[in-house]
Image 1 (cartoon, rainbow, N blue to C red):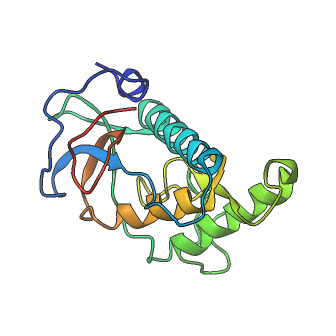
Image 2 (tube, rainbow, N blue to C red):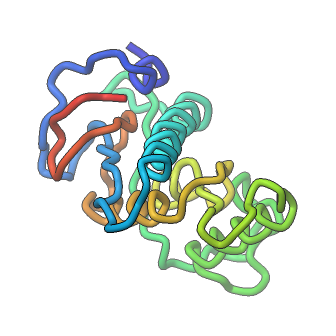
Length: 184
């Protein structure tokens, strides 16, 4: 079963809370409800969350590293605090001449995305969401989707619940504070 098929709604057997270390799916939960939000806003947030899951799973398939033990591609949870060296790599084609942290580089790329595609980001509540977040694989420029800022912030905060070194095999839409629940 491929990660992309999973993101499109295939039932995943055995999705459960696994201690957040080791390997397995990443549970992507919706933001907590906010007073005054309309049904239209909540519907858009759900569409954005599903698009994040879909695009992040495509990233794993295309750019993830093959994990022989698991028999599939994964992306590894990394810290965004380190400063990558000023060396050109696949992830940093221009190097890091200004000695920025991975988090700062990711913000730079997101800012550039908003400038280059300004029509997709009509106001400050629409963020350039990394797919997947930079902490999943260490790529500050993996690809972006316009998404509701509350969804982007929720997804970023949820990543902190996984230990560095966790091997993400797929991203799943989940509910509540657990790894059980309906997929997208």
